[in-house]
Image (tube, helix red, strand yellow):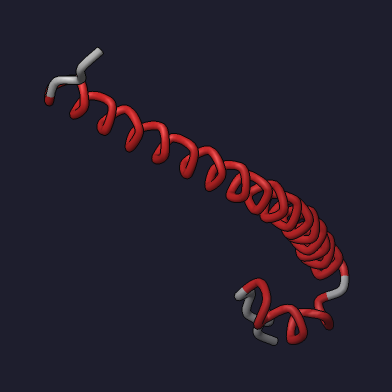
Length: 84
């Protein structure tokens, strides 16, 4: 059976497509592992962020009853000490 130029060209296009599909599969495999790793780091950072925000809220509540802490909280909350 003799191959004509159209058939040969279609086989070449198919081979290139298969090669690219394989490369994209391998790339996706490795990038998804990296994404899972980064997602874990983001979750840990968000956990710490929530704790720090709650600490700031608790300190602000504490400062309502104990205004002597206001100078310490000023850089964090932007709250100015009460004028005497």
